[in-house]
Image: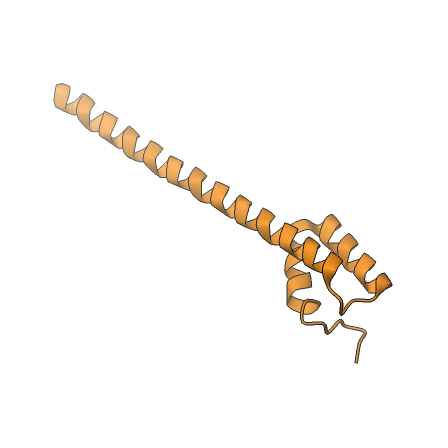
Length: 86
């Protein structure tokens, strides 16, 4: 009987350990996405390659679409080549 209870407790401990690792992974990903979002926002504000209107549009895109907008900005506009420029 004691061996059965011990086996049940070990199984629950493993479940909670996996659950804890999942929470830790989610927290790390949330912090990483926040850092990328803030980085893109600051870069859009300070990027000298962007003119006034383009800068405002990118800032609004980053603010309203959060992580997706930050990734789009970093992929498209950070190089200084915006879709409308030659």
